[in-house]
Image (cartoon, rainbow, N blue to C red; front, side):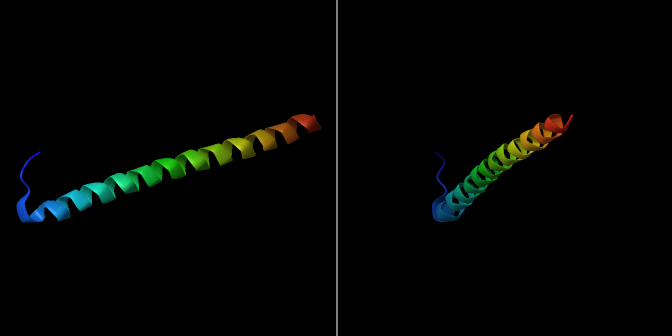
Length: 51
């Protein structure tokens, strides 16, 4: 690992914050996708039941 000197905390903190934000976005998108799929299945099920 390179010597970051007096900026080590700022650099590593920035990397940690960036990775945390990416993880939060991925989790959020997976949850939204799951909810959208469930809603779509409900809508398609209701539509198929009417025909």
